[in-house]
Length: 439
Image (cartoon, rainbow, N blue to C red):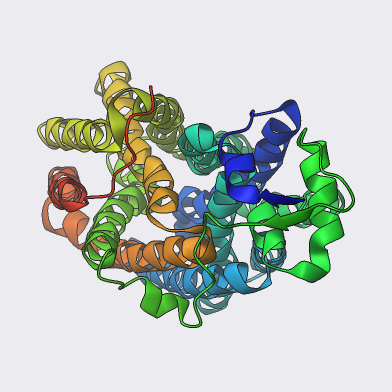
């Protein structure tokens, strides 16, 4: 007897065990989000401790993002070749070790080197987590599963902001980095015992058939010992996965997806890296600045979940274009606001929550769009390369944010955010293979 894995997974139930697997994958992204945000939260404190200007940290930020760019492409290829689980847990070990080491540096140069190494791990974790979540669940639930996983980036960043407001005031930035380094290392060890490999990946390797059968049984599928498992619904793994991204059917969407990731990640990391500096530069304390970045990220959690659910109702095109348009309007409103310590914080924080929520929601749901765009054989590669191209925007944010603040303060900073989201809106509108409405 032969069983086709594609219909078995795509048309099956979303069982409690599969939800548990998505939850475990999402935990890895929480740790990634925490480590992503640590530097932005800590820069104002580091500036005072080392008597360094804000611009001195531009190279630290950009090297970290350059590491993410390399890590995303390399780990995406590794995920398709060696397994998503292997690449994901290895990435956690890399960024956890580097973040822990950064807690003991005493110069900006040493910090830059370790942030570059941490960036390699941080960049590698996300595309493999997205691919893993997508391949655990039935097709109608794929977008929401990926969204619930990637939304943990702003959730982790929110936790980092909350930790920062407490730890920075009492114990300093070094303890914050120690926490951020130990957490992913412990999680990587624990998940090594309970997180299985993607069933799609296992199906391509006959030597791991027993592992696949055991996983499918835990997912609720009755698979006999003599059953032959195939995966006819997916294309065979190409010898050149990078070249496969430019197949005539994919070329235009691949390029537009790259433009979407680049412009949106530039906007996201402008907020991650420079928003605390915007607020402290306006006279707010480090604790208030940490709360500001928390508000910016917290809205992203709710916005991304709402966006993922909207995919099933109206499809990804309508949902994502509305998010991008709302983010543009919010950034314009912030640029028109006079930001100073004496102002009413409620209006400022509400607008930061709304704008950050829509920006993060557009970015988070972009991963669901990417996993829908590519077949399983090139899914981690396609997502990883798109994220890596997006990291160019993150690299630029280290310099663009400093330039905007020096040129025109908070007004120029938020105008820049509005402009980059306009580019994102255009790129998203060009993509043809959006996620269709399923309900």
